[in-house]
Length: 165
Image (cartoon, rainbow, N blue to C red; front, side):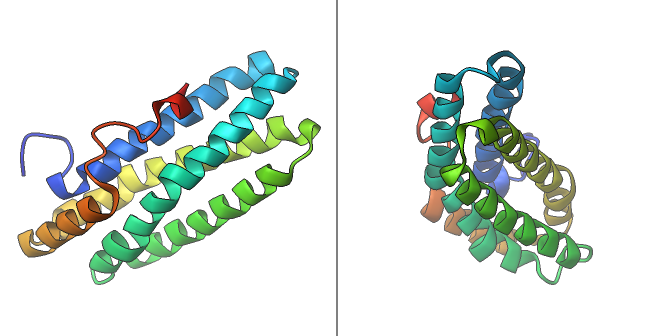
């Protein structure tokens, strides 16, 4: 492990978490100002949906197919993983609702999207990742790192920086 805050094998996921938090911040800061701005709301809806499709779905796949299975036997992980999987499903439902939402529903749904994504990311960073870092062997961490990079890359840059504006 290097001097970075996260184990190397988790760094791509943490970087993507940072991008997700940027999306949440833009929504949270913009809603009080633009609540009645139809164009802004429509743009944020499209950005949230695009971010979900381009960034979150592959991210969820990396967690669901690589990270979570590698942690199933870790002490304290099983219940937390179940919660996180439930939140992934809930996020999918929120995005589906957002796709078909009427204009007057957008402020509330964008707020729900940002709140859910932010709390989910913080739960992974503050609860799940420390469990992994304490219990993952070098063998597990090496396999997880290779598989995550194969699936989502290093996440050195956002996939689409325009979605973070």
